[in-house]
Length: 119
Image (cartoon, rainbow, N blue to C red):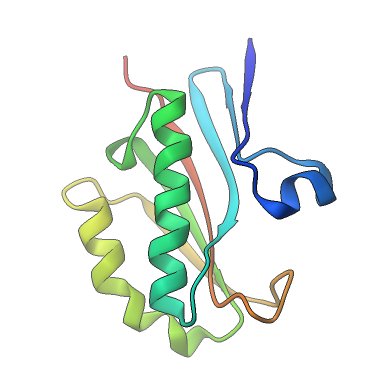
């Protein structure tokens, strides 16, 4: 069975995707951008959106096994590290950071996660 979770984000309807899909015991959360002026504010906002999708799926950040960070400027990644370390705490996932263009130049970070539903 596949379950789709939407968050009402502006790009979900425009692009044709949902925030998360629960399938086969996994939660796949789409690349998520946040609101705010700078990378830290946007990072926190994106994590809040992701946390809500994980919660609706029955998971949490402790269940995340993989995370991908996408930033248009890799120099902006290091300031996010303390926030990310605090978010994942004692359960760090594997991670990849990619420097790339995002859907709108105002966005400074996009985060995608995959979690395993707890038994």
